Image (cartoon, rainbow, N blue to C red; front, side):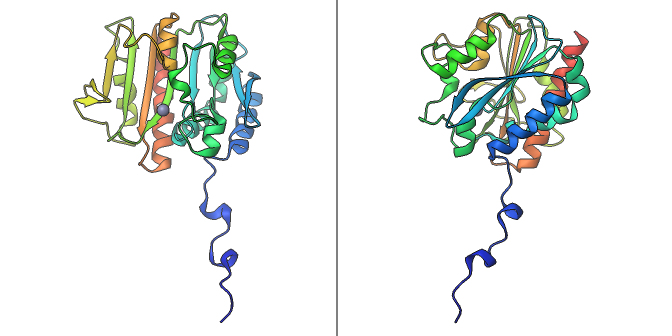
Length: 261
Ligand SMILES: [Zn+2]
């Protein structure tokens, strides 16, 4: 009997392996977005040989809209969603007032791990200037106090879409309208408590800061003066395409709301 030919038995890599964890591929597509959208891009930090990109629209002011994905490396749907949104939104990006961290933790994405190369959860460190990656973020953000911020995530425990909203204006319900836009692609997480916090139809709302140390990105931005921060979570066990499409809808809905104001 002939030896088992593994190479022939398995489909070629490109057929069955999607590229959501291919950092070089993701960054190449972002460079194309930056060129088409006439955005400035810079490398704020390097980790495991991968650059951490920071993109700014040509019309950026001191109070931009802030968009970020990939702080956790095992949340590929969020990274892909922000990228797909940007690729569809080049005209918007040309005239927008926006800053973007498209893939904050490229080493984690390559390894498919929540933490960075050392296993550190960067989203507990945004108030820790002693960490060089966070120090680089703070330098990049010096001079900017975003008017609103969107942090895109995924959650293995989620039973659907949900979001955290920190908003100084208690009359605004931004996360609610964003979830309404995306729920045709993925259902909302309807639990009354999510991650130990009271939730209403997938929205966890706060006006005051929920914590004082080990701050996530969204809370650190709120503490620094951002009026509204939105953290969206898609369920990690869902279909990748549905997750990324839902993330596209969430960012679209935020931009619509932002342009109304
Ligand atoms: Zn996350």
